[in-house]
Image: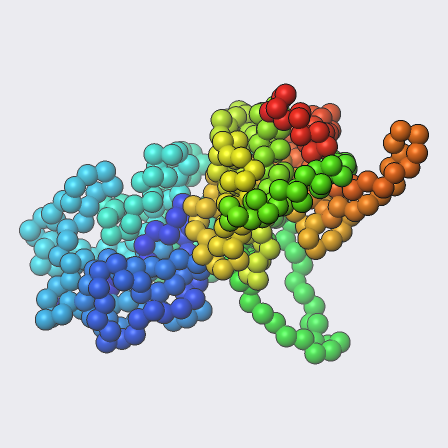
Length: 456
């Protein structure tokens, strides 16, 4: 008997992915936990293992296809014609051991609407988010639902992608009439409801206004030859994240320059020692240590805003994201507990995680939990730029290329190595004076490392 293996939960707030590569073929005999396909999510490539051993009866997806969590990907048949372990194993509850189904349902699978698979509405509390991370096969079936404006919960047979689409365009999914089997709601049903104006959902008071939709492109081929390429998952995720950040956060960008003439002398002096430890002593590695110290002096920059509750969430950890340029787009791995590591350790970890990022081996967990971000474009060039804050953080430091400039010191102009820095921050929490103080502190720490021992 063949059993369909479904795409498991891929991580927090990850609902779908693109099939990059099939790792098995029909007729292959696979072992338990053997990778069966490679999925590319918003910002990571993940190998999906098989939860059971058996023979691949049929492949249900193809390369390049977008697959939602809970969708069947392959059909597996136990060798000898018996049931696979996945088929034999009774379903588990989210918080307890496996529960055997009633005898009446053992002979005949429960006929439930297709929409009830993986349609658990997205929750906001930590306990509910932990429950949502349980694999679909291990969750008890729960009818999909939606909360209407009157607080009542109604059954909503709709896939997560359809529910998300409805939220994004402001449609109350609970008021949409489904035209599919068992009343299943499709994207077309949501669009029809939006056009009729009968299913407009109430907007939370603290929610930002939706970004203005871009007008459709004209026929650009009228003026010459063109070609089109689909967004990669990374580009799609970046576009979505940057649009949300730009339309939500009132940005202010502060500019300053740090005199790193003496720092460059010390950096070159100790470069060989750091290379022996497996790293490279770069300005970014030094900045990580400086930024971690600055976040302790200015705790507002190490916080997040909870607009729904009207609270500032101060973090007592110092995890710094570092923007890395890759062939797939900009990725931001996070270096954890920066305040507890010295510059040599940070240099080695930065080199390691940068290589991992460029080779596409970064996991979702390694890109989450950052409290501040550093983006260094100095290796490419430029005199300055205004980076966009990475939600839910409240600030980001941009670094441009250092250059020799004439600086008036001690009665004469002297050639000094000046490093342009730009600090973008959320003006809802951070005032201009705070931004100027923070950036000046970072500059002085680079110019006078002894300041770190005094205040860091």
